[in-house]
Structure formats: C-alpha cells, structure tokens
Length: 156
Image 1 (tube, helix red, strand yellow):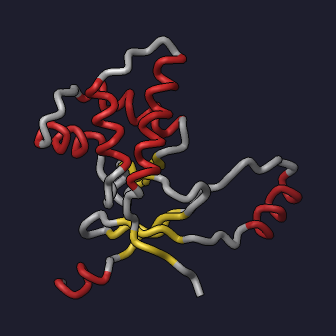
Image 2: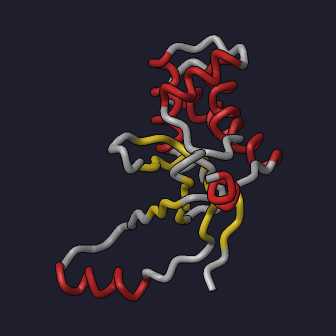
C-alpha cells in the first residue's frame, strides 16, 4: 500500500531552511533582504501549489513588499537549494510546492491545489532498466500525480 501524508510545515525545519537561504545569498554576495526571507518563509509553509503570480498576490496580501521579479529570483534560489519543487500543471503552467522529505513524489488536487506527499519510490528497478537500455547514467526522475482530494470529491 502506498503511504502518503498531507503536507504540513515543520517550524524548526522552516527556520533552518530560512537560515540556509540567508547564508547562500550572503555567500553569493547577494542582498539578504527582509522581503526575500519573508517570501522564502511564505513558500516553505505553503500547503498547496501556487504559481509565481499567485504567490506574489499572496505576498502582497500579507504585507510583503516584493515585486514579481523578486518572487521569481527567490523561487529559483529555493529550487537550487532543493527546498521547493516545480509542479507541472495539467494546464501547461507550473507552480511551486515546498519539499519536506528529500526525494519525494507529490499528489496535487486538480481542484484546490492541495498537496500530499508520497513517501516511497518504487522506480529503482525501472530506472536501472532505462539506464541499461539507453547507456545513460540516470541522475534522477520526476513523477507527479494529479487527482481530486477527499474534500473536493465530497463537495463536487
């Protein structure tokens, strides 16, 4: 049976991630601004997938004075650090969701955007077969599931 759990932010993990963002920005000679750190904290506590534009709107609602360019740059840094993953929507657009377990697969509700994390990956054998058949050294894979969450199924 596949185990999954709803995504919930772990306060200590979020704070460690925020500190990592600050250190990485400082190491690069980038500015460690309150806006970037507030955006990072907002993203890392999301419980659903948001597009960069939706994230910008939410940031404005919460009083974070950051432009859309800052949102994109912050998301790029968070992705580089392995703290978020891009979720490709069925509409061809992408959103972002926090990563909390290292390697993970996500299940995204197509109605409300809520995410759940699948806590196991059974693709090791298939990955080895693909590598043997193609000669590639496989460095990773991306699997995303889409469906309707229990709440949305009940309200439909």
